[in-house]
Image (tube, rainbow, N blue to C red; front, side):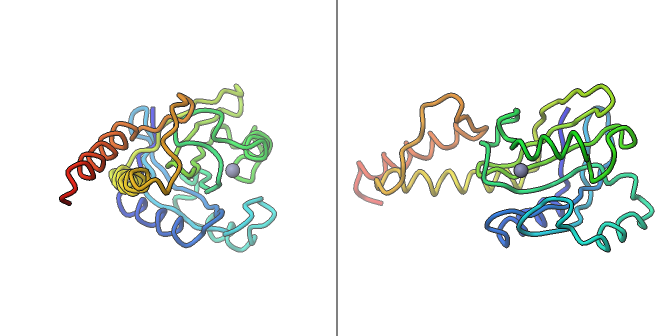
Length: 199
Ligand SMILES: [Zn+2]
């Protein structure tokens, strides 16, 4: 079970990430494909603070008028917490409270289930909540663009690490990233390069 993000939507999301240094929030539209959710559209609702009360009601009203309004099942936001590895540590207590008491801005019993996605400093993670059984499943958020962005970030980090101007990579297992292998390879590459003094 995972959340797959279509290519154009992934591009839009990362554009909002670039434009909003702190936080933003919106709804993702998705369809089910087997066990997975495929997000095919994203509606940006608010930058900065992401409480539902901060979102202009007209914007939510506009979404409810869409033919596929029922597919607006994913709450999407960005925040500075977490490490991109699926799990409860990526979600703040405010997030937990929002998801459990007002999922998608509605009543848990009526919504039934919802998904959430958050952009942590180390990439996207997701969760799917059943509001009737109170169960949460933490899932990966998948798109090729996200992989590329993390690879570029890892390479930049590798150069900084080699030059001694950034903090070194953590050995803490909790600080896991799906791209650790890439990061380590890149650091080695840069270190080899420096040893040879010819690049
Ligand atoms: Zn949050």
